[in-house]
Length: 193
Image (cartoon, rainbow, N blue to C red; front, side, top):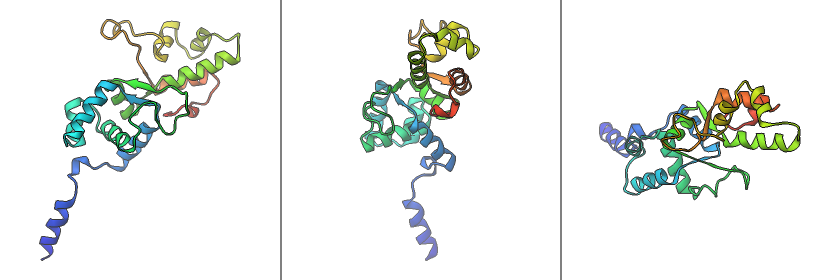
């Protein structure tokens, strides 16, 4: 009798690949706290597959997305936060980055953050000090003018501009920390650092 009860209990459990480990839950929480959403076309494809009943793992494989990204976007849809303009935890008026699949995967792995936050800190610093220039901030962080502008998302990378013509919307965490320090801010003031 015990084996029958065990079989019924196992039949009711979700498949193992769709369960999140404690590390994945932590990554999901960090990712959800960042001011970023998946770009509309990729998001539309994700929701279409979800409405067809595909598992998060299947959606992740088909769309080349990290499973954590799929989990987050599905959760946002279920809670009504799938619209980038309606996002809990982000002050009204603050920009939300719309990221490509590649950029969202970078965020999910924890090696990058949205650079929109850094652009906001730069704008605040420049408004407070009329003698401060963007070039001075970038030199203080150890960048040339063009490297810093690409890192902050003001300019596209020259090798990629022919493909998209769009500046990158993410920045490596070590680069973000350097820019935050050059602005006189603690890296911990930037979400994701």
